Each structure stands twice: as structure tokens, then as C-alpha cells.
Length: 247
Ligand code: DC
Image 1 (tube, protein in one colour):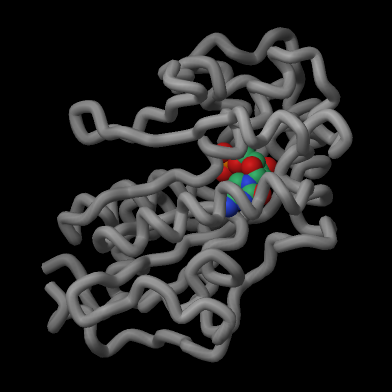
Image 2 (image 1 turned 180 degrees about the vertical axis):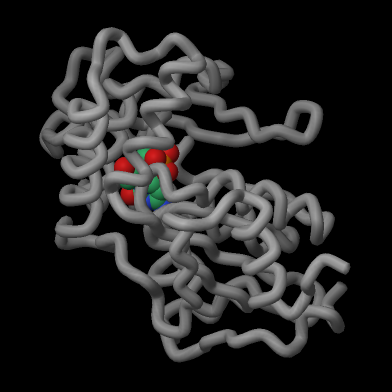
């Protein structure tokens, strides 16, 4: 597989973390805004390459959930920072799917609400929170080859990643996808398309404009706009970019 992937653009100019890359262990870093299709692409790429997929958003979601459970404002460093030494976040794979554990409890089923999405976005702007989770993410990447998705994987967590992608789409297209997904899952809770669009824009704005590790394409990242593409086309494009076009 490594040989097949050789002709790919990769970038090693962000030198602050030379990290996990060895001839045997490599990473695929995928960043982008909410709803762009990152996790769908990342999961398929991981499966195709036979390596694990790590969803870092779930870690920030678990942190946000804890703050909400304690009645804290997730944007308030004064309440969040003291909580960190007693907070344990870990992941495990159950039937190939990532499960996220908060203080020993599997909270995978509790983190996909809009309330937790916004809490994750708020708490992720606190540098001490990021420091703790980046350490965990780098430790995972050191152990084995993986596909990791998030907002700062190519820029901060694994700047030496062999492959870096920035998967994006227009806010309207992302809101439309979210709207349909929530509708199908009965999770709309009376919200209109405009409400979902406003939530997406709010989260983009916070994730892109925070002082620490804002969402932006990493140097050398290949930008994939999924606005006009179906998932199969996106995956084919990404594999082609990676020099491993599915035959
Ligand atoms: O990918 P997601 O929607 O599950 O992420 C939830 C929030 O967590 C997102 O709005 C910003 C934050 N996040 C982050 O700051 N850095 C990451 N690497 C992943 C997520």
C-alpha cells in the first residue's frame, strides 16, 4: 500500500512537530468545517488502506458534554480548566467503530446533539483543553498508521502527516445535508433549514476565528470541495490524490 501511495503531494514545512511519521507508520490528516463529509470520507479511506480512523471531534464533544453535565458554561475557562485534571477521555473500537469514553463511561450515544456540538466548539477554543487532547491524538498517531479528522490535524496535531486534505463545501450544501440527516433520524426538533444553516455558520465562525488552532487548510493540504460531488466521487478523488486510485 505504501508504494501505491508514493506519488502524493505531502508537505513537511510545519516543523513544530516532526511526530509520528516513520517508514512504517504514516498518517492521513483530514480537516474541514462541520458537515463537509470529512468523517464519511475518512472512514472509507481508513477501510481502504486497512488502518484505523480517529474522530477527534468526538473528544471535544465528550469534553463539552462533561462541562454541560456539571452545569458549567463550556466557554468559561475558569470553570473548565480546573475540571481537566480529573477528566479522562479515551477511545476504543467496538466492531471496527470508534467509541468514546468519558471518565470510563461510553458516551458515544450522547454526543451527537446540537447542544453538545456547540459546547464542543466553545470548549475547544480553550488552549488547555486542546493541549490535553492533542497529546492524546499524537500518542495515537505514534502507535499506528491512521486517518485522523478534525479542525487542526494538518496544521497543529500532525503537521508532518504524509497526506493532508482539507475537505470543504458551501455552508448551504452542508446545512442541506445536515437538515436531511436530522429529518431522517427524527432529530430536527422543529428546526427549519434556516435554523440549521445558522447553527453551521455560528460553529464555522467560532472554529475559524479562535486565536488557538483555528480551522484553516494546512500548508500543502489538498483542498477537496464536496459541494457538487457525491460520496463515491469524493472518495475516488481523494484516493486519486493519494496516488491510490481504487482500481
Ligand atoms: O468534527 P465535529 O463536528 O464532531 O467537532 C465538534 C467541535 O469540536 C468543532 O465544532 C470544533 C471542535 N474540534 C476542534 O476544535 N478540533 C478538532 N480537531 C476537532 C473538533
